[in-house]
Length: 456
Image 1 (cartoon, rainbow, N blue to C red):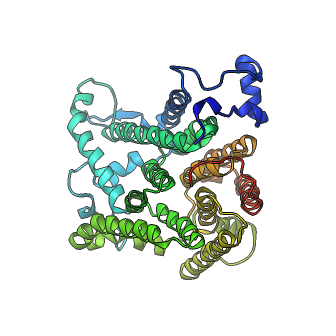
Image 2 (image 1 turned 180 degrees about the vertical axis):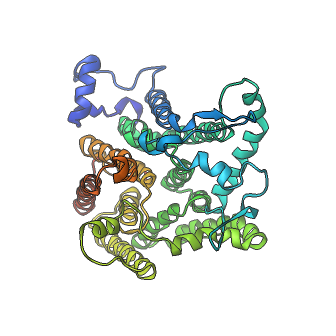
Image 3 (image 1 turned 60 degrees about the vertical axis):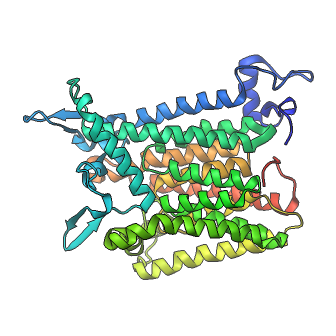
């Protein structure tokens, strides 16, 4: 790992960064003392930037946290006038507090409700449910103090605030780990800390904990601590499914290096960790545990997927859900096979993060569900694999723009919502940018002229 005295200034390689650096203090000279600041180290600056953008993320949801006091004195959420769409402040955290029984104090997977002729349960993997349950317990314990102030703060809004606080701490931890992996290119991590996607999606759903666990696994693997990496992958998969795909990248490297035992150790620990968390809930509440799998197998495509774009702009009939499941899984499996071949046939050993980037992109492109906040999963792999500031900022800005456009479209034509063509233009632009990023990463693997060197 290069020492801090050899830290690389982004002003030397990135035109976008050069503009900021020149504005702040002029161009970096040949004999500039880079990396000798005692207090304002890159890590402290990155954490400060991350906290500022997390605060922007909180403010972007603030309009959906406003409460209204009823005649009985209780405060409820005020989402009148389609506020969640008009202000683009929708998030899953506040409505699911009461909608999933988190406000009642019981075990989350024991709670059920009826929709039509179907009995529903909490639709999140076990560790995510336990996380929500723990924060909800703190919410119920402390809310009387908030209510005593007389402010119109709904209990669900307080739950959101505590959830945001916990996830902010986890995001700062992720920044710390990424900065450690970035080595002498540490300033590239400002693309993570100041990502526009943090403003719109940091608190849309419970994605940050899974990202932090995935980053912790990458950090551990880069230091050959494969058992610890497996632990974090198991925890991440128990929170959201996508950290499981990290195993694909490390499998490619294990086959290429002919070092299968470290991978098997990682895989074994991941499986044991996942089972330890899931089996007790699976046995005690089988219907609640299986809701995540049932919902994902029975739901159709989401608004911003490739399948939705095709359906809105062609006369082709919509695919039945069973066929859609086969098509989306088949395309993703084919993409993973192509990544395997690429990783094995490349002249030099790819970096794990390059393979992780390609796998996550393939999942987002071909999966039938691309909830807008899923794009957060790609931020850290993209920055580590391809730290091209102008390209990444362009993609993040367009991807962030998808959110208000989607909210505006969901208002409906009768409420002056935008037509689908405007939303589709943003979605197609995002697809073009992701395709360009993917091509550059593939060329980087084939040519072995990496923009950065660190980690595995």
